[in-house]
Image (cartoon, rainbow, N blue to C red; front, side, top):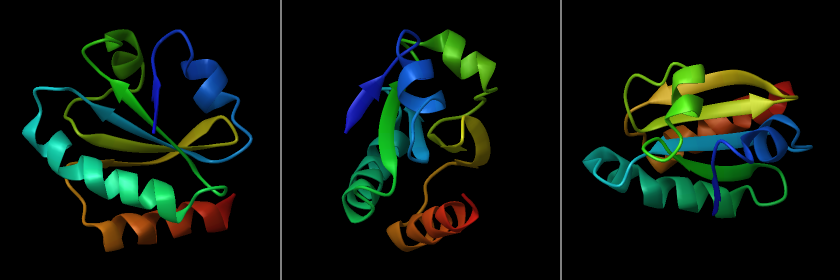
Length: 107
């Protein structure tokens, strides 16, 4: 899974041809560690249909502030350069897959 930061967020997320799931996380965050394997599995399941990236909020606080990230983990969906959905907290794989399918069906 690709890491993004303030320098490449525009290119990798906003200008992406595919819908993008951004995992806003930090190394000290316990729930972030719990959701990481779920995000990884969804990334593999939707390869070629959905781009999945991670953004460390400690390293890129300006991006987290821009998108009003108040708690982590926050998962944000972008499509066509716009944020279309967000989830804060842990989500099981089935629920996240269902959310991905909803986002993909709207693009």
